[in-house]
Amino acid sequence: MIDLDTIDVSNLNRQFLFQKCHVGRSKAEVARESALRFNPKAKIVAHHDSVLKAKYGVPFFKEFTMVMNALDNRTARNHVNRICLAADIPLIESGTAGYLGQVTVIKKGLTECYECQPKPAQKTYPGCTIRNTPSEPIHCIVWAKHLFNQLFGEADPDEDVSPDSADPELVGQAGQSALDTTAAADQPGEGTSKDTQATSNGNVVRVSTRGWATSHNYCPKKLFTKLFSEDILYLLSMEKLWEKRQKPNPLAWEEAGAMGGDKEGGSNKGGIADQRLWSVKECQEVFSSSVHSIRKRVTDENTELVWDKDDESSMDFVCACANIRGHIFGIQRKTRFDVKSMAGNIIPAIATTNAIIAGLIVLEGIKLLADQISTAKTTYLNRRPNPRRRLLVPCALDPPRPQCLVCAPRPRLALKLPVGRTTVGALKDKVLRGALAMVAPDVEVVDGKGTILISSEEGETTDNEGKMLKDFKIVDGTQLSCDDFLQNYNVLVDIVDCDQLKDGAEFEVIGDPEQLKKEQEEQAKEKEKAAEQGTSSSSASRLPASPAVVEEDDDLVCLDDEIIEKKRKVEEEKTEDEPPLKKARSGGASKEVEEVMVLE
Image (tube, rainbow, N blue to C red):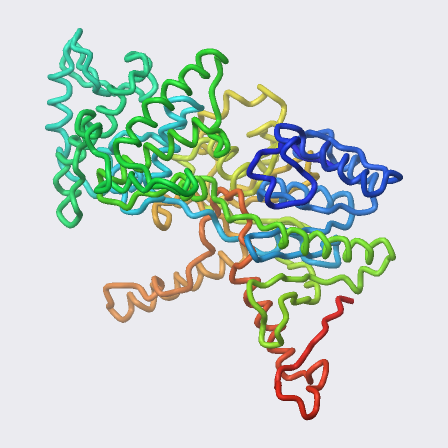
C-alpha cells in the first residue's frame, strides 16, 4: 500500500478507516492498522511515499499479481498505468466524483489502457483575463493563488499578477500614462507602493511582485494599496479595455476598513463559519493577519511554500484576496467553503460512493485471482437510475485502441509548435512532463548523429534548456525519440513547425501523424479549389478541427465525461428492449417492477 498523504480533518467524512485521533498521521500506515483489526492474519506493508519514485518501478510491480488504483490525480494514474503495461501486470483502475464512480480492468494487449481515451483537459484561462479583465469568481480565485505563489512560493513568470500592458486587446500607448505617473511619483524615501522604478536615464524598470513586497517588509497596508488600488488605477488607464466592459472600482485601505455590516453580507451570524460570507472589512482583516502569519513561516523555515487548500493561513489569504478583487470588479463574492472547493478543484467526496466502488474493486480482483479476466467488466455508478432502474451499469471491456500513444506497439505522435520560439526547457516541462505525463524524460534527435537534447541525468543537459529548438537544427519534419526509463515508455515525435496555433496555444499534440498528413492534404486541395473559383476565403477553414491542445491535468479525474456518457447510453439502449427481470405480481395495485441485479 503506497500513499504519500497524511490524514486531514476533511478526510474523516469520506471513509471508515480514519478517526479524529489519526489526524496528521500517514494514510497508508493508519489504513494498514485499521485493516489488520478486521483480519490480523493479513500481510500488509505500508509505504508513506510517492508512487512516482524510481524505486517503485517495473521490477517492484512485477512482484505482485495485480495492482489496485485509488488515486486522486492524473499524473499518478498515467504513471501507474504505464508501469503496469511495462510489467504486464493487471491493473484495476477506479475513481469517484461525488455520487459518480467507475471501476475498470486494464490488461496489456487485451483491454484499453487508462490513456487510450482522451481525458477532458483542465479548464484554463488566458493570462490577460486573469490579470486584467476577470468576469467570474474563478478568475479572481486563480489570480489569488497566483499571487500566493508570487509572494510566498515558487514564482512562475507565466503567473504574474501585475496588470498586463501586452494584452492583445490594447493598442498604442494604452496604460503608459499611468506608468509614467507611477515612475514620477516613486521618489526615494516616500515609501510608495509601486511596482516600477525610474532609473537615472528616465527608463522605467519593472520590479517583481516579491521583490517589491520584500522591499516594503510585506506591509499588509502597502500590499493592499498596490494590489487593490494602484494596479486597478493602472488598468483603468487602459481605456480600450473598458469600452464594452464594466469598469473596476479601486479600493483604498481606509475605505475597505469602513465596509461591513448587513449591506456587505458579512453580518449573517450563526451557522458553519466557512459558509458565512465575509464582508469587505473582514476580508481586509483576514488579508492582513494571513500575510503576517505566512510571512513569518517563510522567514522561520527559510523556504518557499506550496499552496495547500488544507493550510488555514494559505486558504484564508486566497479567500480574502479573491473576494476583495471580486468586489472591485463587481463579481459575486464567495464563502470560504466555496472558494476552497473551487481553488482545490474539489468535488465533495461521499463515503457511500467510496464504499460501493471499493466493493466493486474487490469483485474485479476476485475475478483476476481466479484467472477469469474474460468475465471482468467496466462498471459505472450513476447519479440516478437508468431506464432499467439501475444505478450500477456494467459494460464489456473495450479492446486496445490502435492509435493509443501509450499501449500501441509503436507509439507515435505529431507535435505542432514554433521551433524558433520554443525552448528545450519548454519542450521538457510543458510537453513531455505536462502533456505526455513523463517523469524522467530523455530525448534524442533522430539525425543519425545521436544528438542528446534532454537527459534525465541531473545536470547533463541543463545548458540546453534555455536554447531554442532551431538551435539544434530541429525543423519541420524532424523526428525526436522520447523515452522515460522509469515508465519503460518510448514515443516517436514528428515535429511540425507552426508559427500560429489556434487560440494562441504554445503547442498542439496530435495523436496520429498520418491523420495530420491527410488533413494537410485536404486543406491544400480546398485552397486550390478556392483559388480556381476566385473565392476570397478557403473552405479549409470549415474542416474538422484537429484534436485540442493537450494541457496540464487537474487533480480530479471527472468520470462524467462524453466518453463515459456514450458508453452508458449504448448499454442503456441495449437493456431497454430486454424483458424485465421479474414479472409484476398479478392482481397487485402497484405497477412497479422489482428488480435484482447480480454482478457477474
